[in-house]
Amino acid sequence: MKSGPPKQPTAIRLLRGNPSKEPITTTEPKPAAGVPVKPSGLSADAGLIWDHTVALLAAVPGLLTVADGATVELFARTMARYRELEAFVEAHGPVLVMRDDKGVVKYSQPAPHASLSAKLLPQLRGLAAELGLNPSARARINLPAAPVVDELSAFLAKGRA
Image 1 (cartoon, helix red, strand yellow):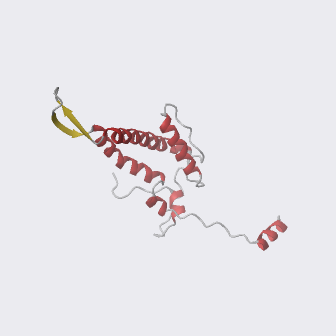
Image 2 (cartoon, one colour):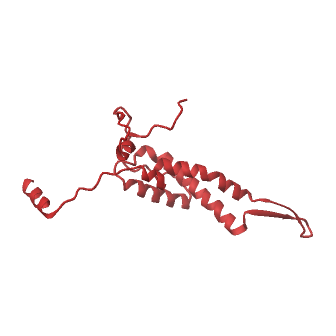
Image 3 (cartoon, rainbow, N blue to C red):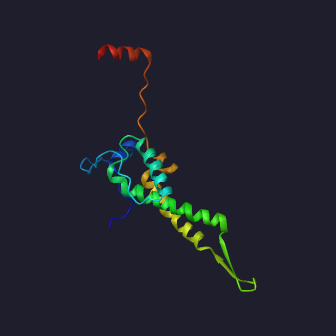
């Protein structure tokens, strides 16, 4: 197994620029661009997260491919589960208090929902970074500047067409 950070896809390297001036590979497999098929069996919340995430990623040309479906699905399912667990913790608190038959507190323990929720956070952060959904991942992406078109350039371009 190779050490170091995983290789970035060529599309991401081109968007971020190439400060190291290392040659960018041209032999990388290129899945078909487009929106992956929404998987069946997603919960209502996971389905909404899927739709929102795909819309965000599809807004960046060349970023989303049909091969990204599994990663988006994992993100949607994990985020939906995280929200479900956090809703329980909000409603019932992060600590479970166990009482005996007389109502006397026997012991308390962290709610399993709280610890499960905490365990999902690193997974969510990793998936969000892979998809470019967090601020630090977006900060590394340099989109090409939109061309500035003034009235004269637009007029001259019409004459050439």
